Length: 201
Image 1 (tube, rainbow, N blue to C red):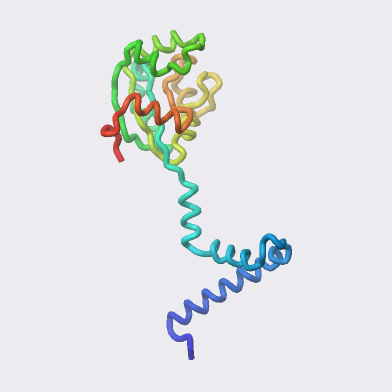
Image 2 (spheres, one colour):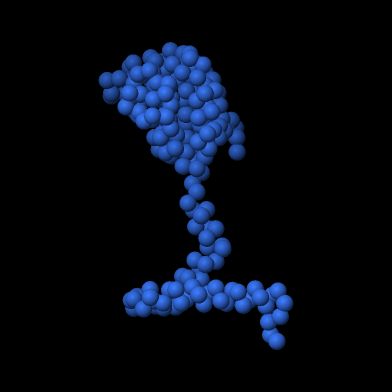
């Protein structure tokens, strides 16, 4: 006999599996246009069935990002740092850089320069320079979006239940946390507070 032992069983199982996939795909093949020949459909089935193909598609779905988070003066005054960091951990966000500091008024103006034409800009800068802050880099899958969702609406009264701002925020100004709004702005904001040597890999 050609197929003997365990190797023969595996070979028969593989052929049976591919044959089953081919049969199940026959209706699609019957509808194939001239621009998509049957051979390409069959190759697509084999590729989809292969473990390496599945692994590569899964790896493309997982996007590890870094984002900047600031625990603002109103939150540090109320000793909320540990509670807020616990919320990050529960959402699968790791802290890969962390420092406590107090911004000068000029530093706050530079950091929020994108809002310089907004009426709230002077008050925002004064508030951010009014006390210690915690600047942090959060890392995780889809970190920017996940952090923004966890923070909630900038107005705590309009934030969803369970968000940080809904739970701890006092007003639009004193809303506990800041988070980058895109991957691009996250890179710029992280560089504002941290050198590469301060970031853990």
